[in-house]
Length: 372
Image (cartoon, rainbow, N blue to C red):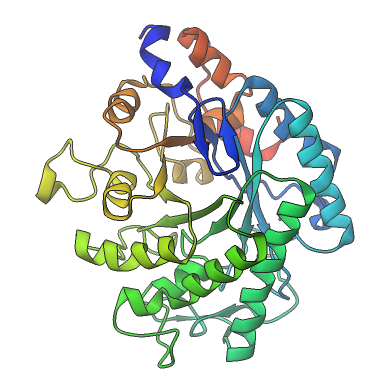
């Protein structure tokens, strides 16, 4: 592939106060490398390297809000408390010094368990005390818990704005707390935060978004990451038709979401092939069509295998970007998030931009254990 064929990736993008030099986003990737939850010099340098390489927008690893059991591993960074926020201030200062743009991904892990057996020291919480359908874990959130959680998301977003971040992203995907409210298998509530329809179960997320929007004002860009699949159940689908997807996503955009970050395991897979065929719109494409919002697509960009294999010790080899370029040229999505390819190769953007594709690196799961 010629360098010229990737020109679409290097067009500028503007939304509200956000101006990006290109369409490439560094995807949020959990690193569990913040001792006691405090980001330090190694974390700042990790993100700065990607800014120096020219990533358009960096989204941080998931960083958690101020709730007693908001994280499921002790190495996950906090986004509250004086020490952690001071660390994040140093991160964004380093990224801006390198000409980059960045936002934190604000997170609550819900009832999900630690991959390393860590305990938060407080009862884990979720809509109905379930981690997955029929899998009890922790406690069901009270009205007070819900109100406090909504307020904690809003405070975190306001802190991100105050520290100088360019955007903020809410993690509403992959079977974590916000997503556990969306999912009928884990939200069995009979109050206003539950219900038979996806629109009803999206009330919690809508209230989080509204509170965040009120906290940051109208011009600060807000991203919401969403997925159909869950780590607890990979084939899960919240919306099985475009109408159901509109019922889910339109209220979230109306509440104040500017960008929908649509997570797929493989970005090239069509969302509703029964409607528009095997080359049809992917998840992000349908989200854009149904809501009119800007969208980010993501999922195994530039690599042969999806990211779940990395947790099983599997590597992935480099593949071409033809499918990505083709879908971006037809306007299917606005931005593309790149995860493992950028994690293992801080110079990925430069190599793609200059056409040095032979120098692109295969992904080794060993990269998950260090901040390169």
